[in-house]
Image (cartoon, rainbow, N blue to C red; front, side):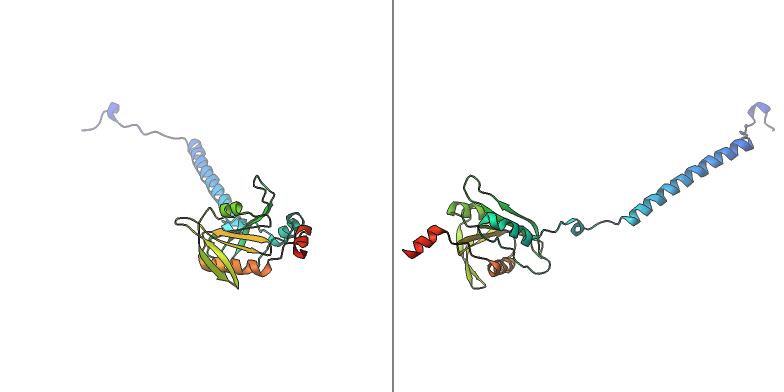
Length: 206
């Protein structure tokens, strides 16, 4: 039985010009997308992902130490450390409410742990204890011929303290003892004596 004209499906007819315009629009959109992807890929290729070390600003501890020496009254230590170590800050801190001015350097070890070095010629027991995070004295550690005071407490950083030639040095951080030993040895190797004041010289002649 044949279908009546009313039931015959009507197929839409697109004019050739309209079909051409539709195809051109689709092709143009695809070309635009491909162009965008290509541009992005070129940018990524020209700017590869940078490692964290790339953004690490070098800290010239020796230069900052030399600049601070006149103000400090002594030459702050700028230890020479093995490859893999670096300083992430170095600064001279003027006296605060406690009256203690000090040299302050942060070192990142080869094992990516941290040790802070503080030095002062005006240190007092309260300041020293504060820099060692008020940890109790738990012993001593002899490094490169010098006996450092060890301060440690559970779940806290450890500290080594040494007073040599009028300069008090406090090393504090999370590193292993072997890394403390490296920094302590390098520190005492370059440690320069504080100048003797006129009062001290007078006392020495009495």
